[in-house]
Amino acid sequence: MARAFKDLNEQEVLALAISLEEEDARIYDDFAEGLKETYPSVSRQFKELRVEEDGHRHRLLEHYRQKFGEHIPLIRRHDVKGFVTRKPVWLVRPLGLSAVQKEAELMELETRRFYERAARQATDVGVRQLLGDLAEEERKHSTIAETLEATQPAEEEVAARKRLFVLQVIQPGLAGLMDGSVSTLAPLFAAAIATRTSRDAFLVGLAASLGAGISMGFAEALSDDGSLTGRGRPLIRGVVCGLMTALGGLGHTLPYLIPYYQTATAIAVGVVLIELAVISWVRHRFMDTPLTSALFQVVIGGLLVFLTGILIGSS
Image (cartoon, rainbow, N blue to C red):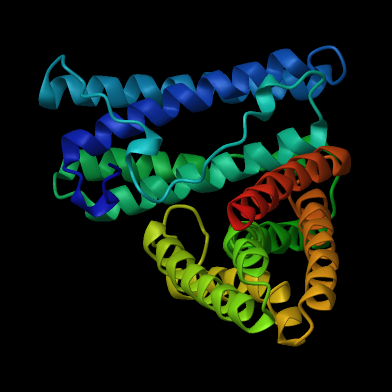
């Protein structure tokens, strides 16, 4: 079970920092390898970043050895609450320059936030100084946008705001919309087919939608405090996620206010198709997912849940 960052002691913080630097260095190396044919100058820049990350790791290892000895406990980013789940874009060939840029910028932002918070939390003077120095060095790293293309400052500011908007609003909202739209299909249509009355189906859909909204809202708000990832205030994320979850379920529940069961079901099915199309478009627009891939994943998932509801309701 993931631990809260504030509960880590200094030995665990240093062990986590070593793990992060090792992972980042390998990712930058993969970026350099994947771009060396199409963007050789960018590839060299990532090689330089790899060298810098290795230097950070060596300093962390040396300090850890002096203070805690030779054994380093195994602790990774997914063992601690608050880190962004990284998409393995470095495994895709050929590498897309835009995807690499966004991933590298997110890595730099997250690492800097980690060191800043870890330094504030440290009580040992030597550990605090080391983490503070590393935070400052991460801050001084040239942004990938500046090294890849001659991006204008105004464009950089717009890009930064867009990334924060995606992290703080789009991601929790999309997670809620997907959960609400898909997870409520089975109970709603199972109730509709089993009872063949609009009122019963509406009550089941309403309960499922509101219940899922409350559950997802609390889950998102408690997932992390946003201090490491820049994902914003947990309360706002929780409200966005909860509302979108409830909205996703209510969309195909409201047609059952129509007293005629068959008419209500036909309209509800049409609403479901619209919801799945909207989810696919949002994933394509903001999450860099190919439209055909997004449509396939969302529609297949929704169809399986829909068929589950039909089978259960017909049994």
